[in-house]
Length: 134
Image (cartoon, rainbow, N blue to C red; front, side, top):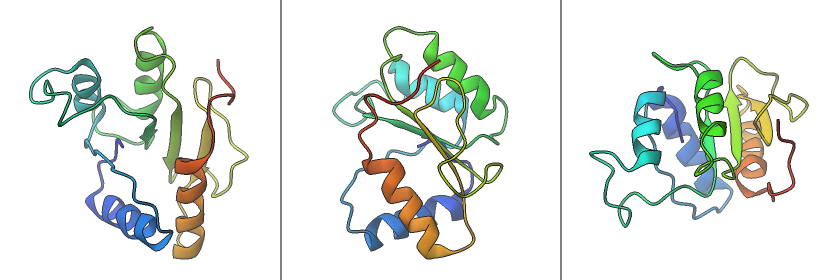
């Protein structure tokens, strides 16, 4: 998960527990660290501690390189191009109607915690293998 806001990250953890998901979420606060994580660069070189993700969940508003640029970077690298990308960002409407090139699912963060939890559940448990791709 690429999320720079600690409060949003904590809400995500609470929402996952509320939905009964026992998913391990590795968090990095910006796109630069997400790129280092994917490439196994320090401090992420130990793949037992920092395995390649089964999906990438990113915010769009990030410090430095934004989420749009991160998505483009990931899709340009064959080694990571098959990893589903999910966007969960306050700049989108809180439903699953938005689609961005290179992503599988997109939704906006909600102020309603139950909606928030349900969106997270959908984003993190959906079968994304056949999702839209650019």
